[in-house]
Each structure stands twice: as C-alpha cells, then as structure tokens.
Image (cartoon, rainbow, N blue to C red):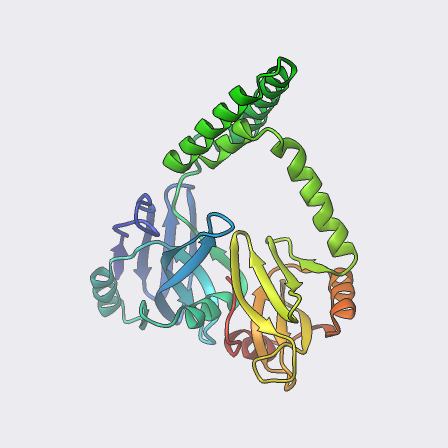
Length: 322
C-alpha cells in the first residue's frame, strides 16, 4: 500500500509552503524534500504533530512570539528520528494515519515546554528537512552587506571630514525608518557602518569572557551566563529562556552534565537529586564547561551515557531547546 500526503502551509504565518512529501509503503515511511532533492526512508513508531511558541527579541525592550509547527517521526522510545517543520493540515494527517495504521499524537495544544522537551530528545542520526529552497541571494548576502557597509563607512568619513554631521544623522534616521518598515536587517550594515568594527570586537569580548568562565557557549549559538542575583540565564540568539536559580531546590541548578551518546552530545542542567532541570543538545567544549563551572560554583561531570540514561535525561527534563 502506498499512501501519499503533502503539506498545505508554511511553518508560521507568512511562510512559504514547504515542498515536503511523505508516503507509506508497508512499514516504511518515505520522505522527499523536493526543494533540496533530499529523500530518506525510516521506520517510525509514532508520528508527532506539534506546535509551540518561540519567543525572540527584536530589540532590547521588545520581543515577539511566533508559533513553530511541524511533524516529527518518533522511534519506539520516543526519540526523534526526523523533524519536518511546517503547518501540516491535521485532517489530512488523520486520514493518512487511518489508512496506514501508524499512531499519531496530537501535541498542537500541549504546553510549549513539553513539546520542546520531546523535540530535543533526538535519536542517533536524526534529521530535519525544512522543504524550503535556499534564498536566492543567500550566497551574495555577505559580500553585498560588506560592500554596502564599506560604502556607508566611506560616506560617513566624507561627511565628517566636510563637517556635515547633521547630514549623516539625517541619513541614519532615514535608514532606521526603512529598517522598521521593510525589516531588511542586513541593510543595517549600510546605515550603521561601525558594525564592521563592532561585530568582531563583540566576538572577541565573548571569547574573552568564555576563556575566563564568565559565560559558556555552544557551537549552536546557545550560551549560559549567571546574573548578579545568582540565576542561570540561557541565551539562544535573540531569545532569552526563563532563568534557573542556583540553589538547593528541586527546580534549582546544582551541577552540569556533558554527555555523549552514539554521536549525540549535549549539556544537561541537574538539581541536587541529579534530576534533569534543562536539556541543551549540541556540542559543548569540556574545558570551557570546566572553567564556567568552577567560576560559578557548579559541579561538572563529563561522560558517555547509555541509551537508557540518555532517554531518561532528555525526556524527563522540564524544558529543552531543540
């Protein structure tokens, strides 16, 4: 029996429709990403239709929240084999599973923390297919941004040398207004040429802080810091996840665990009973974690875990970041 299903909308309002198709043949789920030409086959135990809220900062004082939706294929232990972001039409999914016999979990109204925890528990070799073609100007974005930034810097130097500071301030004001209207963030380099200097300096400062154990960063862009009131802050790009207090409570952070399991790695924040409080999958440097733990007064363990331990750590954590 060969059953096919196609999505009908994007991952969030305004997104393009992901070009992803799934079909079922016997006990094999075949997935094709027609945008990139990728295809794979797997044998999931369950399909997991999810939706969770993702908050991100647009400025120092303003943040936005949008719904991330998708369909995940889970193995028999509840680990994610495949993640397919996108707004899958639920009636089509129910018809699909009725004809194939594969169980479907409707997690569209589950708490966001629970959904992120499930998605963070990844099986070895897990994949994520977006079904979206790369942006047309993606390969040219960086050189164009640098060129515009250099041109903006030259214009600023010229206007400054001729005493026309007010003209530059007017151009900057117009640029900021355009950014607010069209949300073309890469144009900020043109109207703020000092970013060409500020960005590498900021990166150097971050490395300096990491070398001294002030922060702990991951290759995925997530990093940890401790606030003045003794709370562990998890920063993910522009988003800031809820703080975790350092202390002896069941929801407090006492120690860190860096784990390795069959090609997977991550960081788990543990309480005093060594229960998982938060799970952050991804590569973390043991030396940097050791410096951070010593400076912040946290215990640290680094070791490989078994499949059973990995499932317990990832599925029992109260929150997670996919």
